[in-house]
Amino acid sequence: MVKNKILICTVLALSSGFLGGNIGSQITLMLHSQRCQNQNWGIKELCNVWITPGATWQGSTTGVWTGAILGAFAGGLVIRQNRS
Image (cartoon, rainbow, N blue to C red; front, top):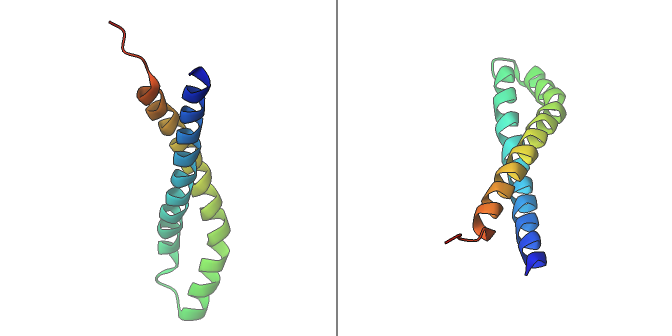
């Protein structure tokens, strides 16, 4: 039974970490790309190409950590035993 609890908590933490990484990278990319909106078309495209890797890395790293921590917390709440 203990192995199942560990497996449930681990799977929940990892899946929420990956989901958080995806969401975090999308949000950070949208926020960083707003800097390029007031440029001409060619400069705007170059600006977007320049900021995409850094914004994606920053957002996904933050999202993975936040998602994994929150997922582990939620997993702990799911598998905890009621003490009577």
